[in-house]
Every structure is written in C-alpha cells, then in structure tokens.
Image 1 (tube, helix red, strand yellow):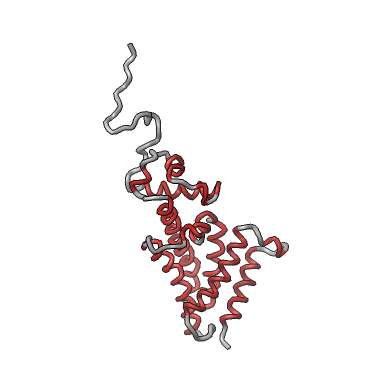
Image 2 (cartoon, helix red, strand yellow):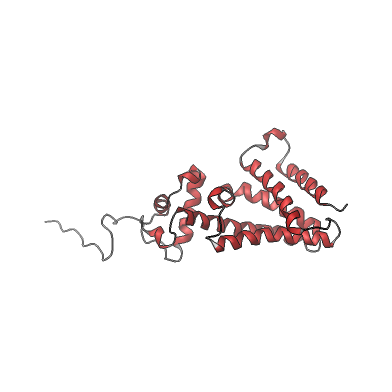
Length: 218
C-alpha cells in the first residue's frame, strides 16, 4: 500500500511543489511590488489584483495580505518605489553639475523624461488616479514630496544665480514640472511621432529651453 507523505505542519493542502516560502518575510513585499509592476506592464492597472501578484511571485494567495491590506496599498507601494527610484536618478543626473544651476535644472528635466521612458509602468502608477490620494500612505507622500523638492531646490538655486525670475519657487517648479510631465506622458504613450523624425533628446532640449524662457529673468 502506497503511503502518502505526511504534510508538514502548517502547510496548506495542495501546496506541495509550489514555490511558496521561497521569499524571506522581509523580502516578500519587494517581490510582490515587482510582480505588480509586471502585471501592469502587460495588462494595465486594471489587470492588477493581489491574487494575481501572489501567483506572479509564486506565493500563496494569502501571503500578500500580511503586508498589503488591499490592491490600493500595493499600488501605493509601487508608486513609492517609483518616486524613490526617480529621486535617485535625478540626484545622479545632477551630480556632474555642482555649481552650475542652469545645468542642474536641465539635467533634472532629462532625468525625468528618461525615467518615464525606462519605467512606464511605475510612471503610470505614480501619476495615475490609483495613487492620487496619498493621505493614507505617508511614506508615499514623503517620497513624492522629496522628488518635487529637488525641482524646487533647483529653481531656488537658479533664482540665487539670477537666471530665474523672483517669485514663489514652488509655483515656478510646478510650471516646469507640468511641462516636463506633459512631454514624458506623450513620450510614454507614443504620441511624439507628430513631431516627425526629431530625436527624443532634441525634443527634450526644445521643451527645456522653452520652460526656461518662461522662467527666465525679466
């Protein structure tokens, strides 16, 4: 008579052969965030569910609920990761421009567009309706404010150098961000073909030049 091996204590029926348990408890959130990004890349935000993320990560359907109360919480974690990555990319882009406020300003704009093109799923979640209300997610709110703070600081440096007009630095930063964000969204959605054969770099330079023209000293 064939004996069925006893199931280890705590293991769910049918779990034999699954990849369940391959993540340390502390690493599971990052694995679920990565799985969520892949699902959004392939099917959009509507394709993301906690169960789908669990399947993608190779864990049980109950595992995500140890870290995320619902889909909204997982989306907030994806957005937070995106803002932290964008902030790091912007810091790296501006590092060679120490003491050059104008060069720093332009580098921020290029880094923003480059990030959007390289990480479209993160970008859409970061600035989409799903992650618009950040009041319930203080870490996401802080990460987004840190990213915006880099642009505000760059505007302030340009003001001190006399190359950007006086005024509320946050309002001027919002104007610059709006233009950069619009260009990034057009690029991510493949809408820049209306501009002919001009390269992305040429378009970035043109937009940044016009942004700066609007912000420049009178």
